[in-house]
Length: 167
Image (cartoon, rainbow, N blue to C red; front, side):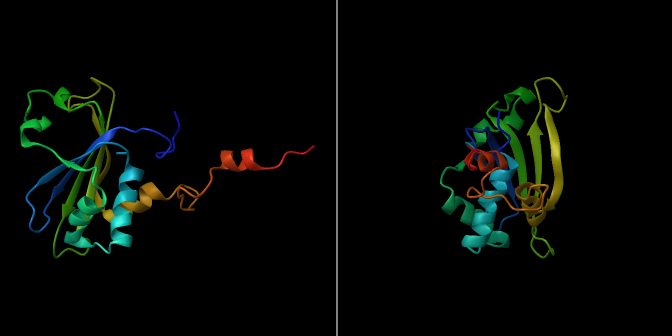
């Protein structure tokens, strides 16, 4: 399986949003491409292109990304008896918090699903504690080499494949 988050179908995720003005707690299903780099890219597009900052980010996400679906309260998995009530298609969980008056009003925490039965807490491992959204984007959008990867940036394998061969 490829490590590129945009290379094919990806598991979905649950994005829980709290503290946004005018909104109650809102839980959104991200039906596909729910890995951290893909979610960070979605949020960065809203922040950069739509100018959404602070409390406006949630509305911008819903306007721009129409595939995000509110989770029916009757289907909240944490209301079930066991952790296995969480759909297997959710590979990640996120908690996006808006804290007005804070120097960094948007913070996000992330968890990744582990194999079945590996944890008493339902098989979830924390990827990051609540960190500023800008740090989340830096952590998951910038590769270790420091150069930002975009869809237009070819991978080293593609570059080698495109190079002319010696005759």
